[in-house]
Image (cartoon, rainbow, N blue to C red; front, side):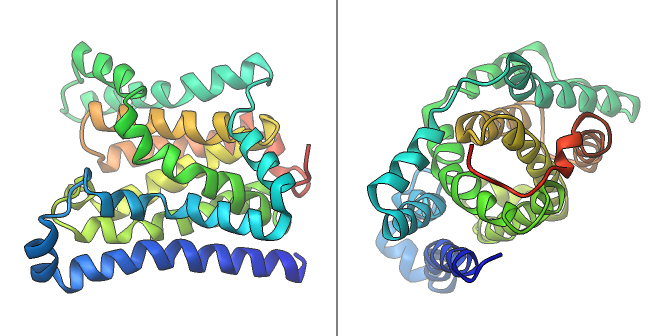
Length: 266
C-alpha cells in the first residue's frame, strides 16, 4: 500500500468515525441535555441520519479533494453500474434470502417456529422501503464499498480485505447499541458482529465479480440483508452460524476469486 493509500484510509476512518461517534458522544454523554432540546434519539431523527451518512460524506469529501470531478464521476458511476453477468445479479438477489430460509429451517429444528408467509412478504416489500434504504445502504455503501474497500484491496487479497472492512464496519456501529431509542439496542452485539462480517465476505465476493459495482455489491445485498433480517425475526446465534457458514462456502467453494490479485480499476 502506498503512503497515499494509507493517508486516504486514515482520513476516511477519521472523518467517518469522527462524525458518527461525535454525535454519539453528545447523545450518550449529555443525554439529559439532548433529550430536553431535541427529544429522544430515534431512527427518524436528523441526528441519526447525519450519523448514518458519515461514511458517504467522508467518501465524497476525500474523493473530491484527491481526484476532483473525474474521481467523483467514477465513484458515482459505480453507484449505478448494473451491466454484469446474470449469475452475479442472481447471487446478489437470491443468496441472502436463501440463507435466511436455511436459518428458518435450522431454527425449526431447534424449536423455533418458522416465520409466516406474511413476514417474507414484508421482507420483500421492505427491500424497497425508502426510509430503510436511506438509513442503511444509501447512507453507507458509497463509503464502505465505494471508497474504503477498494483501498484496502490495494494491499490485501479479497478475503482478508473482507474481514478487515467487515470488522471496522461493525465497530463503527457500536454507538447504535448504546442508544436506547434505536433498534440495535435490542440486539446481541457479538451475533450482529458475526453476521455483519459474514455479510462483508459475501459483498466483497460480489464486488470482485460485479465490476466493482456499488449498486450490486453494496446497496442491493445490504438492503436485502436488512429487510429479511428484520422481517424474519431477531438476529440470533442460529442466524449468525448460518450466515458464517454461507461466508465459508463462498470463501472455500463458490468464490475462488476471493483469492484474486489486489484491486485494480476495471
